[in-house]
Image (cartoon, rainbow, N blue to C red; front, side, top):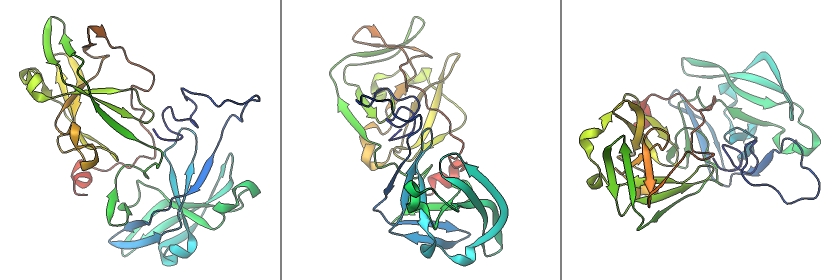
Length: 286
């Protein structure tokens, strides 16, 4: 996903390679100014507000936003004795975050003496996504993790025929599916509901959310668990897939112009530890 996550160019599982005569370092970190106003909210209070955020792209992680201390409410940070060591950026001092009657432990950190090549992180603070109430770009809430400026989604119409089967049963057949290309993932094919036998779709428990597409519903098909999914209220930017359905080729048989699709590298979403554990009501509230 994006620059350093899933199969991005800085990730361990990159599907491409840099054209250089000498091998690159095992790990490449990338830092850049976000060039967007970003804010952090905790206990109803804005505790950080900056137009000078630096994003850290680290292999195998979503990008992390670092705020200048001058743009963080000093009263919100409570120093602790906890110090850890980052393999590339050195000692990391941790703080609790306090506002009103609430305190979140281990909720913020900063590199105390970053190496010369990473001096832009000196005097900057990052906040744990799980611990904060919300992150915003301008007045719009960002869900899941900091948005990756290198993450892109393209949706294309096609006249190819997509057919979905479970055993001998035809679940869907469409001559006008759409294909969604998303950074770091294999193509995903979406089918209009009019081309699906919806009596075969059984709503599955649990939803997920994507910072780029919105809330996702899942469906079981026969004994195949979470074999299909849909974004019934997809974000405006990807509205073309709103309420269409996509199918997992490792759970059901999916054929495109007669050729069976198989899971490709990048087909599966890899859970990530720092992704915020919001409940669905909160995620849907924006």
